[in-house]
Image (cartoon, rainbow, N blue to C red; front, side):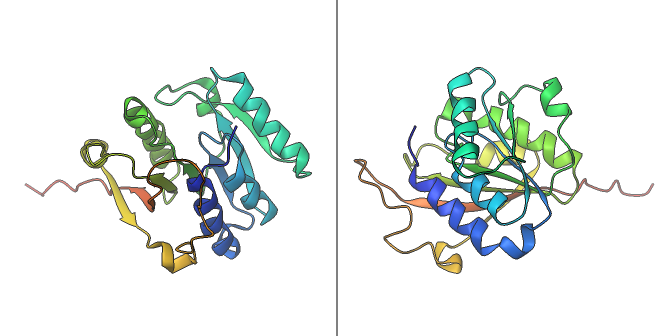
Length: 194
């Protein structure tokens, strides 16, 4: 497991929002090594870490992160994107959903947004804070955001001190342009009176 640049950028954003997230309930999707979720827990949030129910090693990694950081109250749950499972339904009402680099594989984009949409509709006012690494100009979630009636706001990295070359830096080959977004549910359209 590796701490990808997107996780570092999202953890920086979580840190700058620490006053807003204290005592809030937060779910991290695709947590992997769980850096953003661990930072949220250290900032006083109630955190649930999740990764694919089909990848027990990833879930074990989440647990190891909790152990290494003395985060005994942090829950770990297996969630598979795009599936409305008993584990997904059993989640408490949320305030924030975190996802670093969950838009990595285009085949997973819609599954991620199905899960996010379910959670956004269940907990009015919840936001999905996500970072992604630009890998291809051909990969976009714009049509899926429209399909699932979601709104997206880009958050400039310099607005939370993540433009530094020290934040999100990687020795991996290729481009490492990271973007930060806040995704929310659109308000239902009101029917015009007859």
